[in-house]
Length: 291
Ligand SMILES: C[S@@+](CC[C@H](N)C(=O)[O-])C[C@H]1O[C@@H](n2cnc3c(N)ncnc32)[C@H](O)[C@@H]1O
Image (tube, rainbow, N blue to C red; front, side, top):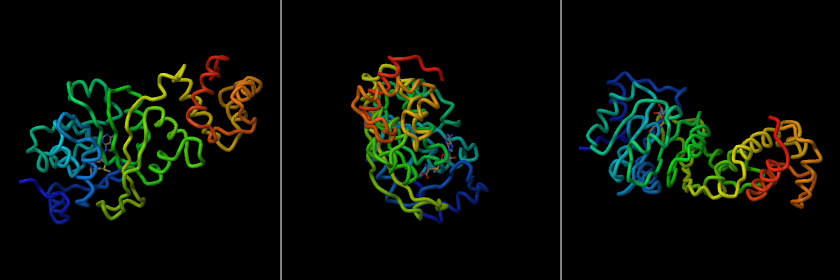
């Protein structure tokens, strides 16, 4: 019989028997709300024909719900102390493979090929918040064939990710993620859904991966470099920010803005996705980048 990992008494007893103490450093806040994990699994494409990559299974609460629905689940956990606990809580699932390691050190396309050949692939996770952006970029930049990424993140990060590019709330990460897909905020999750409760609110988002701007971008490396530099000085005008950080001559930048019928005072955060791609195409074609 499946262990009820949303029952506080059961969870405390398992953790106590293994002498487990939560690591704040590893972002360990485990889900104990029975309604949340089934919802993530369902919204996250955990279904027949799908291989699901889970990042950070913890004690296996979401893992159970994924393994009940998906063809195969592979979960990567960094904290070695959780491996014997996972053996006890989810060891019975024959379609589950637990790997020990840091997700950022894995070659994602190779991992997916090895684990999920012939299956559609989805990523589902309650992410460790201290590395939300590196994990999302690691998955997306890898070019791996992933249909969707459904993850719990800090609520502020979810709001930033789903803000339309070109509005005040958006940032470099918004544009970077939109480059690869569309972002939808699915639902919010209160602090008391976790053990221990984090000191921030959370939300589940889904990124449907489409690589929609990849074909239109002349030099993706330039595009991402421009995002990084332009948004690092977002209070400055785009001309001042990019001349200071990427060492473009101001007339080159002004010429691009005039050609795009944009005001000289425009800031990076004012540009839409299409305008960011066009600007990068014009600059990467017009002149050599020195940084
Ligand atoms: C927020 S907890 C989620 C646990 C579980 N999925 C749940 O929802 O209850 C994040 C998990 O990610 C693990 N973790 C932290 N950094 C990691 C990394 N770089 N690679 C893989 N797992 C990591 C932590 O040890 C922890 O188990």
